[in-house]
Image (cartoon, rainbow, N blue to C red; front, side, top):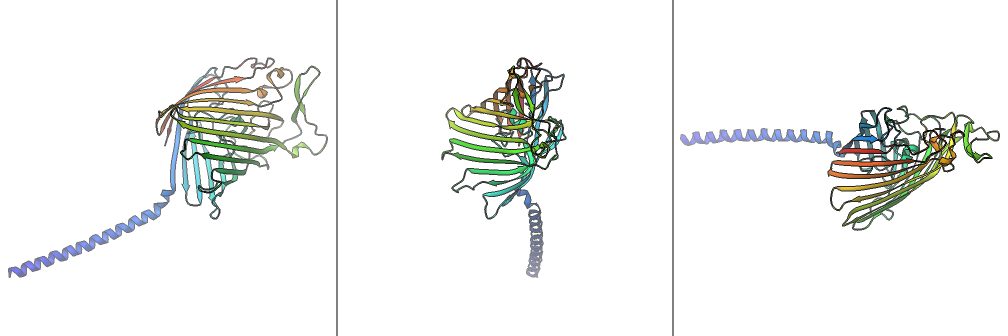
Length: 438
């Protein structure tokens, strides 16, 4: 009798365990289905990358209210300021043959779109891709270099003048051979853009810089070659760029020539519009030619980098500024210019310390010098040449944090006959910046 009871007990326990195992298996199967559904629904997150950086800085300038290209003009009654120079959040979604980029810039001055574009890689020819949207202009080296890795606070004065805010709306085709191909390291960009740039709050001119104002489109083309030695101790690059564009003349009030009178005094001469079609049917030229080169060498002294860029061409602007205009001009002045920069950057050994030196210049009108500005010939300070020498120290405190100390010495060409510019303006500026990048 006892044996029968024991056998019955064992059978009951076994059946209960079997039922429990069945229920557990059902629960596991249900959990697998849930996890599978989550992976299907959230799998796209594997292709999404989020990054950004904040640049908080303090600046001091020699004169209250001085005009400035290191973050914008100072207020009339101030010679120092705290500001968020850039506050970026960037979303990049990629898969095998496409890429989508959306980047916002937020500061105390407002919020604006920095980048929003899509890129499609041709499946049967992966060296070729098509990009359309708001993006950096493919010209030179400095414009496309991210502000998060640049060793100085700002891009050069001429880049800010000729191509303000760096970005524009347009479309381009790229040729970038994949690694392992014979032409690897070679790159070609070519595209068409609206030409007026994009809006950035707090910049000059105002925030109304968003829409195209004529039917003309600007062509930008660039060819680059970048390589490194097998041990990666030497990296070098060379590029050539061309910008061919302009904007609609509003009328025949065009000054594109400079003449001298019997006393040798130079002045603007209005264009002769009596022959041929009216100028109002044509384009005020913005034509630039550029070349750039870079080399970086690793040694026991640390990494030594040398970079340079040179531009020359024709720029149309107003009487008081050579800046590419945000609106059509009632009177247009056409100038020949040249500009350039040279960097010397030295990382100190294997430490977190770096020294950076930069020389740059921008001559908006190569046909005019300071002595030609008599104050009586109608010419303004828009013709003056500027040279800048920057001295900086960078401390890479952490992979996410960089401190920058930079002093920019700005020298303008003097003009004895032009009020306010008979000597160098006191507008040297000191920038102390902390950058956090994620």
